[in-house]
Image (cartoon, rainbow, N blue to C red; front, side):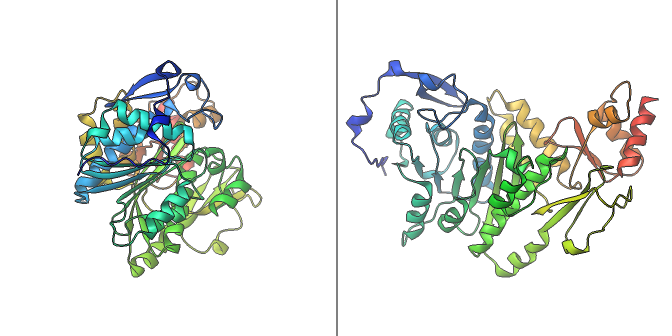
Length: 419
């Protein structure tokens, strides 16, 4: 089957674009144009076509994750929807770096973006490949609804939702469109101020959960996002299993697998819970029980006024270790400039997967204890493990550790290492 490119405008209109107005960029195995006037702008909706070079690590991991998914879940023919493609770089990298793609929808609501996508597809000679490429200029929800309404057609294996801000208004229609068993849903949120508790009321409104602005707010925000995705899946008679959750810089990206089993969905409700936090002493504890049964005073400092909570949120594992190990193997052969950072992120993600919720920033603890120097994290982890407790790094914060050891004893360890 030859390449099929469906556009809503005349091809000749796209070819009016002059290369002098464009800047060529290379990323991964792809090259692409962005508008020269957008090159030095802070990423915003004011750009002619949105582009954020800091999101390269998102695109690197997404390509690796798709290849790992196709292998582990035995998906021989991939049908992908890149619902908010902007310049098209993410979709183009998928086409050049991922195996088994049969068809891809490359969509953006911005007509200027659609022009640029067509230009970039031809630049990479993808219009000559044996892959169906359908470029559309639609609202993402409209595209999902149209795909969901197709009869006697295979549903997409993979849907990517990567908006500027919150993904909350797109998740429901995406679940209606995706393959409901072993579909890969990839959801990005960049409204981190909302999820991290800087704007708590906005988080309750957008994600149906209360956040906490604490030192471990990145993990709390990520777990709120997974919870939200799971609940919307439940509305659509599906469940999800998160297989990779990544925070980097200014975004959270969740990769999750869909399933359709009523009993399994009901059992998954035990993965919803809360985390209790004392703003006085730093005590924290996650639980699945009824929130009405939480203690009225802090179990550590006995303060009755400083207890706070976050939730509901996802309290089970955020990653699948086997999936991450497969991505790490693929990453070894990668030529990405972010190769070492990706290895570090995923290695820490594996280490933290079975650990309790929350983490402790070592520099902040040492500052509170007024220590003259900060012990090496490796020495802290080694000491805690010698005591018979669990301890690991975390990908959410390279200066933090996770442990099932209580906070007062962790402080004693830091003081002891200082001496």
